[in-house]
Length: 395
Image (cartoon, rainbow, N blue to C red; front, side, top):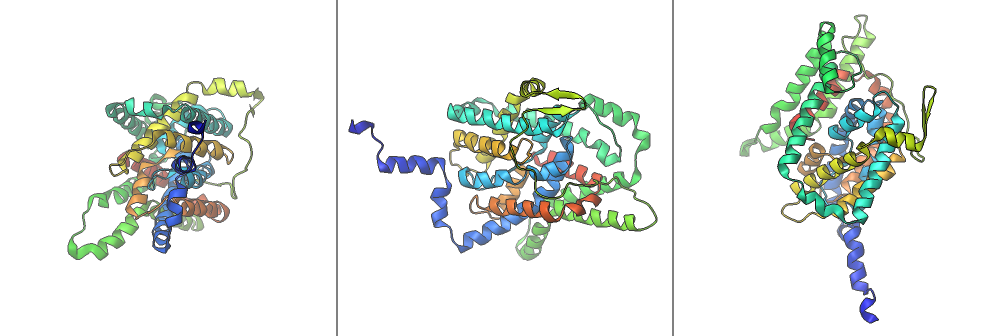
């Protein structure tokens, strides 16, 4: 009988293994707080323009990118096993969401987020995380590379100042070709120059005599997404207040305030047609399984990249990512996963614990509450440039 009982020490280990915050929080100190605060704010400045860009890539209104950017931060700081990972919208998830949203409404994206979380949670309960290790690296690299090409092509319309809706890669190329004569010079110049500004300095290595200067340049570089969007917005506002007219297409109105919190939509109406829960699931089809699996692959790959030789508990990552998506769907989130580019920024910023995500999440909530009126003047070409940077960083 006694051999079947849980020992206090064993139970404590199990709880700490599944709730990592209990391990590192008691050791938290002022130095760690400062490091996490700097990293969290830096990542927050990165995710704001990325979130707006990824929502547009997913065929959603810009605010949905910010709705998707904070819940994962709060969940991962409690259950996450890697201090560097930041959970939120990514180009890959946005692209896969777009296939389900085009011609429909945002309810399908939110329901896909909820169902993806349920699938990931079920995989965690069944301890299927070990299966992730059986998927070869060449398969993952090939999939990611193909996605980069698709994303780059999908943003051509933004970089060229064109406006149309496409149903896929081939249709996108076709419509760009048909409307190439309508290219707006202002958007093209702006988007092209922003890509040069963003990609130019990333490979520079500081020398001994340039450490202070390069540290400043590094701070500017890590927040370059936010900086170029701010500069472009000021430029667009200047044109708006003058009588010369706007040379750029703008983001337009972004819904202000926090997202509507509530149950994910289990039914919806498009035009005069009603969709039940089963109808919506039928429309989503295989994406209910593919999206969560791809999300897990990306998240575990990032965890391994920053694990510094330590083993990665894929089952724990499944549990955490599943809860991020389930709880995120209550805040109108689209499917989320770990972001490699933001995790790299987090790591380079000197993050010490997952608590850095708290400051990122709070910054996003403040942006939703206070800054959305100013997002109106963000040029679409600048957001397209943010999306295309992803192709270089393998987000």
